[in-house]
Every structure is written in C-alpha cells, then in structure tokens.
Image (cartoon, rainbow, N blue to C red; front, side, top):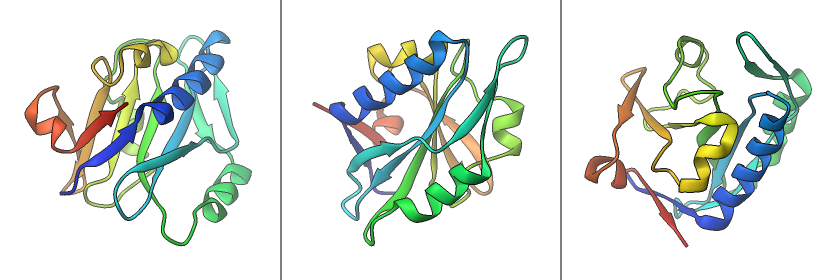
Length: 152
C-alpha cells in the first residue's frame, strides 16, 4: 500500500468545515482528493443533511452524490472519507454498514468532538483502512504512519 500524504493546509480546511458544522451540534462528512502521487490536494464536502441529539448523524443527499460524481479531475481519486463524531473517534455501526468508499485500501478517518480533535492533527483521530471488505483500525504508530502521513 502506498502512503497517503496529507498536507497541513488540507487538514486545516477539513477542520474548519467540521467545526463549523459542530457548532450547531451536527456531524459532517467530506472526502480527501488525491492525485496519482497519493498526495491529498483538497477536501470536498458534498451537499448533506445532518440530524442532532440524541444520536447525531450525517447523510450525503442525492444532490451531494451528483456533486461527488463530477468533482474529480482526470487524475484524481477519493482517497479517504473524513467525518466527525460528537464523542470519541471510533467507527460506529452505521459507519461499518454504510461505507462511503468500498475499495481495498480505502481510508476512513473519524474526527472526535465535532471536528475539534483535528486541532491536534491526526493523533486524536481514528484511522481505519478497508481490508477484505472490513474496516480495520490503525492505532497511532509505525503501521499507521505507513498508510497516512501529515506534512506541514
């Protein structure tokens, strides 16, 4: 597997979007777009709707799915889904049942505390990789660093 490199400015873009949604008590979801060099270029946040308490959720609308279908350049791919949760950075049962990306090696990043967790980079985030049609958590450390790395 080739490492996904995420420049700090891309995480800043994501953090701002997730925190803005989180101020209203809503989760948000986006996708990291990478080129053939596996460097994330930017994030896309398609049209979505979200629900709040007691169990926050987010769902990409039909319009958002259309936006995603036409948003990529010829040499771009969706390398990772990145979304917020109100509490910890675990994959929920809903995340497992409804993977936005299904290809082998896809990444799913869960940002805790409605996006505030990104203020510490990926250290507080959950990172999961798709292997054999299941999501496998990558704990912080060398194995995770081989899959995703943040640069300044």
